[in-house]
Image 1 (cartoon, one colour):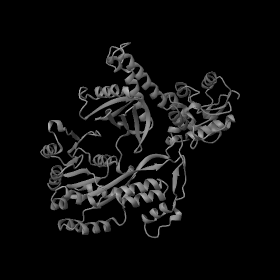
Image 2 (cartoon, one colour):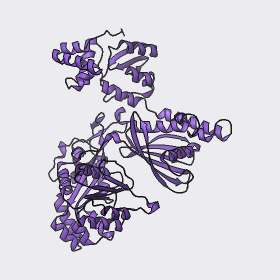
Image 3 (cartoon, helix red, strand yellow):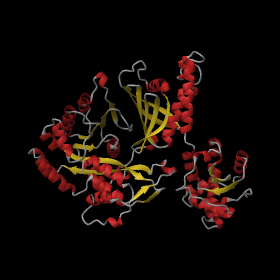
Amino acid sequence: MPRPERIRLGDLLVQQGLITPAQLDEALAAQKSTGRKLGRVFIDNGWVNEGQIARALAGQLRVPFVDLGQRSIRPEIARLLPEVQARRLRALVIEDNAGSLRVAMADPTDMAAYDEVARLLKREFELVVLAEGQLMAAIERSYRNTEAIAGLARELTTELNSVENGLAGNLGELLGLGTASTEDAPVVRLLYSVFDEALRVRASDIHIEPQAGSLRIRFRIDGVLHVQTEADARIAGAVALRLKLMSGLDISEKRLPQDGRFAVTLRGGALDVRISTMPTQHGESVVMRLLNPSNGLLAMESMGMPERVVKALRRSIARPHGMLLVTGPTGSGKTTTLYAALNALNSSERKIITVEDPVEYRLPGLNQVQVHEKIELGFDRVLRAALRQDPDVILVGEMRDQTTAEIGMRAALTGHLVLSTLHTNDALSTPLRLIDMGVPRYMVALSLQMVLAQRLVRTVCTHCAEPHAPDAQEAAWLASHLPAGARLDTAQVRQGRGCNECSHTGYSGRTGVHEFIEMTPELVEAINHGDPAAFSAAGRRQMAGHTLGRAAAELVMAGRTTLSEAMRVSHLQGD
């Protein structure tokens, strides 16, 4: 195609009536003083969006404007242009039809970038225009590190063989302990590629698992594990050893589990990594929880909670004393919810102490203590000491045993607000579970103020969502979890087809479903009289059908999650 002409973006937007001459003058002044691109000034001021700029340029140049929202780009096609150049030039090869290439650019008037793309490809191509944000997101998805990680794993295997055979190097250099730069060590480059890719795909955990004949690396994305790569089993020891060194663990101990923490710097930001090692039949299994401090803590209103749940939670934490319990399985967001509550409570007038294993979030103004069982610094001991520190609010990471639960309950009875978690299936079974643990009934009845049960469900990818017709079993489940008389024909039941945006899973992100009970006089009386049936009946009346299953079904009706996800939550609840 012919080389595009240079266009003055500001004049073009004025001609098309998207901005005024006065706004252009203001933007030019801002560009001169700050050095920002003119288009970015327009967008930051809210005058236009990226799509409007891209469409205006495409119309003026008479080249196609494309929307990649539901389009998959084959990685081998994108890689016709090397990643470094794609990022620098802001260009991406999106199609190769019988030798005819299509290249997307956010700024088709950048002559230098256009000429550089032509030189690199050495082929004729058709230029198309793409909104800048969508272009950069497509570049992130297209240049996945899967192949690079596999290549680094093979390189590490080769280096390890050379060391073992005495042909070159030593183990210290392999692990980044020699005189050479640590970053150049094969195992370090492998691990940083794994961390970078995990951050890229929004993974919450990395699992490094030695198998009989391989080392398997998996990522947990939106609560589900996905295999990232499989490598030679011989590198498992070197990888585990390097991670132990990074987290300050005992490298000589391979027979016992160990826990630690370290931070890595990626893409200009810090990533906190919580590590757990465990001896298995084929070597040490390593699991790392990734905590990105840049994400920050969420406010309760922005966590996807219904308004009635937020109001109840705020009522509970507004009380000067009593206990709030958040329940659910591992990975259901209990700690995140409690820290959102702490964030709302955090002020200079309150002393807040947390007792955790481990400390997951670091919030300024809090006194955070991590338990250490090896030196007999358990939950009960730290909690007793915390009560002598004159706290107003105490967070206990988990009610693990009778002793911890009783100390927490007594604290709630003696003028402290106590927040904690417990592993139960639903809100109604939680008080009964505490009694089963050995906590006296009167203590549960008088100290417990609210129980919030929650689950996380995967949300449908908005880029590839399509209508789904429920089968007979699914329709029956949906009808059974909605109020009587609800019209199923108004449901927007959807599922994701799978696209580049969601790594072909059909899901992108998660949201919470919740149910709660507040300890009313009726519930307190039932607990005190030791009548589980009366307690359950009163609790169901209070909840009025607002269960986890109902919350999940409502998300299905709104098209936000799939029936399979909602039914999974219902199964965990026991409905």
